Amino acid sequence: MGFLDTFFNMQVIANYLPDLIDAVWVTLGLAVATIISGVLGGALMSCLRVAGVRWVNFFIIVFADVMRALPPLVLILILFFGMPSLGINLSGWMVIYIVLTAVLIAFSEEVFWGGLTAVTAGQWEAGRATGLSKAQTLFYIAFPQAARMVIPPLINRVLATTKLTALGSVIGVKEILSVSSSAQSFSGSATPLTMAAIAYLVIFIPAVIVSHRIERHYHYAT
Amino acid sequence: MTQGRTMLEITALEKRFDQTAVLRAIDLKVREAELVFVIGPSGSGKSTMLRCCNRLEEPTSGAIMIDGQRITDIPRRDLDRMRLKVGMVFQGFHLYPHMSVLKNVVLAQTKALKRPKAEAEARALEMLDQVGLKHKAEAMPNELSGGQQQRVAIARALALDPKVMLFDEPTSALDPELVGSVLKVMKDLRAKGMTMLVVSHEMAFAREAADRVVFMDGGYIVEQGTPEEVFGNPKSDRLKSFLARVSNPNEDAA
Image (cartoon, chains in turn orange, red):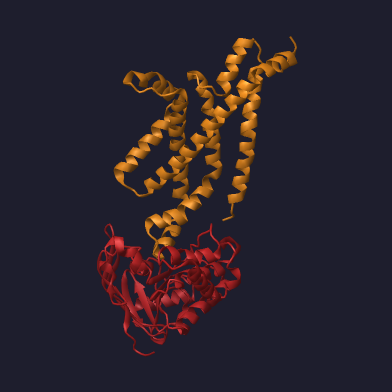
């Protein structure tokens, strides 16, 4: 068998393309849902941390540390295979969504928090001295500056986390990797895996390009 | 200078950080439309005293009255409203770098003072005009020189119609050739009758524009009087040696 026949077999491509396109939508849906709830959750949590309530911050720090320390696959297996024993049946999609969201919240909370601590005390004082409340100063002055500062590391983390949707293949979520690897077993051809790689590129290359645009748009010299 | 009513009165103000006393028994009165200059060596407590006047720093004991209100008794949650009456200008300007000049001046007007947006913008342009920067309304702070940034910061404070303006070393971070433009704005303000308490090392400006000069050292007000009295006829040794050091910065007076 030649190279083309192994990786770009036209017959195999024709057979499995419809399934793979469905899988692309599943991956995209998971990724978008995870990004929205993960980044929003992380932003909210970092703002909550600014309030400086001791037990709340303790919870946030423990949550962020645990979620960043554990391999996501461990959490996925615990939720998927452990929860049914408690009478809680989560779909594979739901398990991936919950775990990746929690992981992204944890990382993005730390990223936003890093940005917030980099906003100078003078900015806070300027806001407070003009009669703005602590919450207003956070919302209008500190957070917008922090968010701009952390766009590059945040985008890195978002991309890294959304690529973990491939872990859905372990628990039967019909996303790109699981659909293509079962197609590979049935067809005996490596072509579906090539298709998977191309599908990931089709999704993530534009994402990388858009992220560069966002970085440039919000960059301002200091 | 007519004897106006007292606008700001500090009585027996003390501030300690842990065991270190930064301010001890400060008494100071500033009358309406008066420009009072505070001078003194670094670490003498000048800035801390100023920051107590809008409670960016919490006094350890003592009282501060501003415009008839005892601001040292205000509970923390009501501080924001009090601060609208006290404008503050910082050494480091602290303009919001992510907002245009106009938005810098509008923000607290709409969010803290609850002015309608159109009115706030009109007021902001008026204040920017007063500091000579109306044409920079759409610029971003990083496109301005330090002197321009500081004038925007002054406009930002003025737009809230404060009763008192506090200046914390407003020209110390500026290149020498930019100092004049900021001092001119301050002089205009004085002519308009603003009450001002200024911590600064601009001795020539103090001589020219201050109604009174206060000399602080070691957390005390050591001496105060008209510029002529303080600069022309210093009584205490500490003030004499401070003035000598300031006028001959290369000479080691210690």
